[in-house]
Length: 306
Image (cartoon, rainbow, N blue to C red; front, side, top):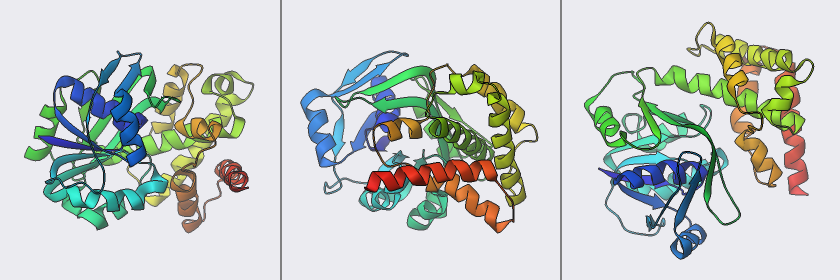
C-alpha cells in the first residue's frame, strides 16, 4: 500500500516516520524548503517512545506521481485550501484520505474537493513539535492516531488500512464511532488550548491553582452545551471523562496552539474556538468563557500583524 503523508512536520513527520520505520511504503509531500532540509540531514524523530532517523521519499507539488492509496492529511487549518490544491494531483478514484486536523470544520471542504467516499474520519493524540533543526520532537507517551469510516462500518478498505498500520511503535486505532471520537477530541483540544493560551501556562499550574479545576470544568460545560444543542453525538458524561484526562496530563503539558504562540506563528483560533462560537450564535447560546478565550486569540493575531 502506497502511503502519502501531507507534510513532514510534528504530526506527519512522526506518524509517517513510524510507518516508514516499520517498513511501509511512505512518501512525504513537502515544500521545497523542507525538502532541502530533510535531504541534507534526514528526518529525525526524537521521542520518549524511541528515536528514529531515516532518509524518506520526498515529493513536491510539481512532481509527477501515480495516485496513492492512502493519504495522511496533517496540515494546519489555515493551510487547508492550499493543501487541498497541492494534494489533488496525487489523489485517484480509490485514494482514501485520513484528515488529522483538530476540530470539525475541515471535513466539508475536504469532501467537496475529493468526494464523500474518499474522505474518512481521523484524529490524533500527540504532543509534538519541530525544533530549530527541523527534528520531530515528541515528549509525552501519548502517540495515538484514530481513524474510521464516517458511517461506522468496518469496511474492507478500512480493515486493509488497519492491517498496514498495525505493529508500529505508534498506536494506530480503527474506530467504529469516529464521528463521536472527533467531537470528543474537538471538545478536549478546544478547552486545553483555550486555558493554556489564556493563562500562558502549561496545564499543571492551571490545574493546581485556586479555582483552576472549576474554571476548566465550566469551560468544558460551555462547549458541551453548544455541541449538544447543535446535535453533535457526544457522550452523556464526556465532561467528567475529560476532567479525569486533564488530571492525568503531565504538569508541563502544553497545547500545540500555545507552542505556536510562543514561536510567534499563526494559530487555529477561528477553526477551533471561532467555529464553536459561530454555532453558539446560531443557537442563541451565551458562552462567556469561550468568548474571552477567543478574544485573547484575536488580540494575539492583531499583534502578530503589527
